[in-house]
Amino acid sequence: MKKIINAAGAGLLFCLLGIASAKASSTILFFSVNMATNLANGTFNPPAPAGTGTDAVYANGTFYGWSGSGLQLVQEGNTTIWTNSYNDTSDQNGYVVDYRFDINGAYETTASYDNRAAELPLTSGAIVNLPTPYYGDVGPGQVINVTFQVDMSEEIELGHFVPGTSQLDVRGSFNGWGNAGDYLTNNPAIVVTNYPTGVVESNVYVGTFPITTGAEVPGVPATNAFMEWKAVEDPSGSWESPGPTDANDADNRFFTDNNNQVLPVVSFGDLTYSPLANVTLNVDMSGPLSYDPNYMSNSVTVWGTFNNWANGVNMTSDPAPNTNIFTATVTMPESTAVIIQVRYTNNLVAATTPAAPWVYDYVDDAIYNNNERRTVNLPITATTLNTNMPIFHFLDLALDDYLPQNTPVLFSVNMSNAVATNGYLFSPGVDAVYINGMFANGGGTPYPQAWYPWAGGITPVSAPPGYQMIQEGSSSIYTNTIIIPAGTPVALSYQYGMDPGQANGGPLEDEAPSGANHFRVVRSTALSPYTMAVDTFTNQPYVEPLFAPGNIYENMGTLSGGNLSVGTPSGGKVPVTWLGRPGAHLQTASSLNGPWTDVQVTDGTNWTGGVNTANGLMSVTNWPASGHTFYRLVKP
Image (cartoon, rainbow, N blue to C red; front, side, top):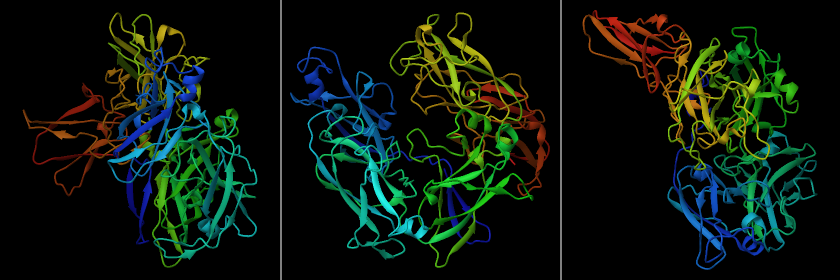
C-alpha cells in the first residue's frame, strides 16, 4: 500500500512503501516442455498414443498460486512436446513469473536448482511464448558464449566500487556460484545517458564467458536450460540485489541457455546513476520493546540496497521526546527505488540460529521479490539533499495494534465435504485437522510470531501440542481454544491443514495455496474466550475487514474497516453498530467541527456488547437520542 508522506519543513514529496500490493494484470502465457528424455528413459509414461500409462505433466507457479499439480499440458501432435496456455492474472505486468514443470505433482530439477522464471511485458493482455526446455533440463545441448554487461556508475558514485582497485565478477549456476575468475572489464565505448539526470557516463563493465555446465544437472546444459547469475564486487564480496522486475524468486538474474547471446546492460543492484542524498530514517520500536522479552539492547539496525546489504547501520534512540524512536542517517541515491529493512537482535533467536539472529521489519514475501519491503523514493535535487524521513512503526504496528494481554480465542472450522488442494476428501473419525498461524510462535518460540512447520515429506514433522482441532460430537464442526500471547497483532492470519489417517501427527499445508490465509480480528479482549466466526475449510480463506489507518502485518487495514453505522432513533435511543477492535473506540460530538468526546468504554479492551456475525463480534450500543449527535470510530 502506498503511503504518500509530506516531510514537514522539507517542501518535498516522498513515497514510503510498506507492503506493496501488486496490481492484478493479464498476460497470456504459452508453456511448453520437451519430454523426449523422459519418454526414452521410461520416467514419463503418458496415455496412448505416446505411451501406455497414466502419467501427466503440468506447469505450476506463481501464475497458478502453486495450487495442486498445476496446469495440465497436452501433447502437441505426435511430437515429444507438451504444451498449454494460461491467462496469468496473478503476476503483475512488468514483473516476473516463476514456474516449474512436474510429473504427477513431483517437481523437476533445473540446471540452476531454482524455479524457472520469465519477465512479463508491461502491457496487459500481451502474449508470451516461454522457452521450450527439456524436462529437468536433461537433454542434448551445446557450449554457448554469453556476454554480461553491468553498469557500475552508481556504485562508483556511492564509493562502493573504485575503478582500478575494485574488480567485478559474475557468479551463477554456470560456475558454481563461486569466484571462478570471470571478471568484467570496463568498455569505454559503451556510453549511457541517464534519465532523468541527463548525465553521460561510460562505466559499463563487460565480459564474455563460455557456459559449460549447470549447477544441478551435470555436463553441458541442455538447450533452453534455465540459468541464474549475479554480479559481485571484489574484494569487498558485495553481491548485488536486483529489483523485483529483474529477479526470480531466488533473488537472482536469469537467462535461457539456447545460443550465443549478449545480455542487456543492467545496473548493479538495479541502481541507475543519480545524485546522492543524506537521509535520516526513523522507526518507532514501541511494540517490540514492550512485548519482546528477548530483545537485545541497542541492536536496532537498518540494511538495504543503499549499501548492497553489506552490513547493518546502527540506529540509536534519543533520550527525548520518545526513547522508542530509533534513527540513523545513511547515504542513498535520488530518483531510484531504494529498499530498506530494519532489524533487531533477539537473544532467543540468536541462541538457535546464530547466523541470522534477527527479527525483521518486513522480510521477503513468498516469492522473494521485495514486495513486502519498504522502498524510499527521493526526488532529483540541484544540490545535495539532506532530509529527515517521517517516522514509521516496526512492521507498521503501533503499540495499540498488539494484544495487550494473553487472550483465549475460540477457533472453529466446518469440515463438511472439505477437500484438500490435492483433491483429497476429509474423512471424519479417520483424519485429523489442525490450525497453524502466525500466533503459533514456531511451536514454542515466544517471539517473534511464527508458524510451526507443516508435516509431510519423507520425515513428517509433528505439530506442537495444542493446535489440533477437536470434533464437536458427531458434527462437522471442529474447535479449539488457543491462548494468544500478549504482543501478538490483533489481526491474525492462519490456515487449517489435514492429517490424512493421522499418519503425520501434524497437518499438511493443503487447505489453500501458501499465503492465502484466513484473516480475522480479535475484536474484544474483555471476552474470555473471544469467539471467532466459524471458518470453512476452503482454498479461498475468509478475510475480515479491519479498522486501521495503515498496514497491519499481512493485510492492509482501512479507515472504513470499522463498518460504523448509525440507525434510525427509536424509543428515545439511537442504535450504533461497528466492527470494533482493541485500540479503537467511539467518539461523539454535537457538531462535525467538534469538540469530540472519547467514549473509552467502547474500546475493544473493554467492550463486550454485540452480536456475532461473519466478521466476528459486531459491537452494538443504543445511544440516548437527544439533539444532534455525530459519531466516529478512532484509533489514536
